[in-house]
Amino acid sequence: MNAPQDRDPAPMSVEQIRARQQARARVMAWLLVAFVLLVFAIAFVRIQGGVE
Image (cartoon, rainbow, N blue to C red; front, top):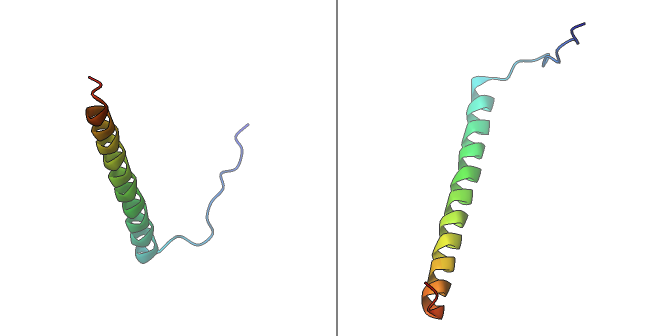
């Protein structure tokens, strides 16, 4: 009925967890910066083109 769950034989250390969290936070920060720049660029082009 129930499939056996995949368990990691060696649990991660606190340092490994923190490193993954920091890496994920950096990726999210870069994605946020890219999104803000994209919105700014679109707004700039629309203003320059006179499109309202």
